Amino acid sequence: MWEPMPMDDRDPLMDAVKAVPGVVAGYHLVDPETGNGLSFSIFEDAEAMAAAGRAIAQRAEELGWHDQPRPFPTSVTTYEVMRQIITP
Image 1 (spheres, rainbow, N blue to C red):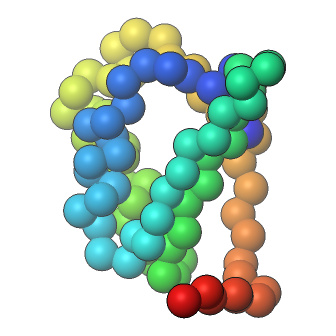
Image 2 (image 1 turned 120 degrees about the vertical axis):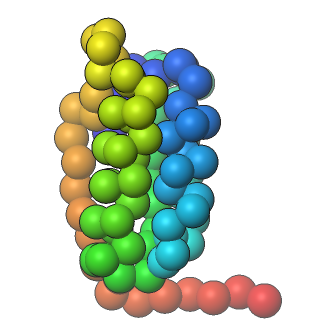
């Protein structure tokens, strides 16, 4: 959960995640009224999730991302799939 959703350019970090095997999808959602947001990603397994986190951390370090203050999520929750609905 983001309060508010950061609007800075995060494409370099997202590009690092795209290269990780097992990353299925990722979304950034924003409430247009409050500016708060939600990011969620779908991974094939826990290792892909961990690898994506490492890829983000490595790219952030390469960019000097943390050389200046940046917004950080107010909360992070991990869920496991209980049911899946696939549509054609």
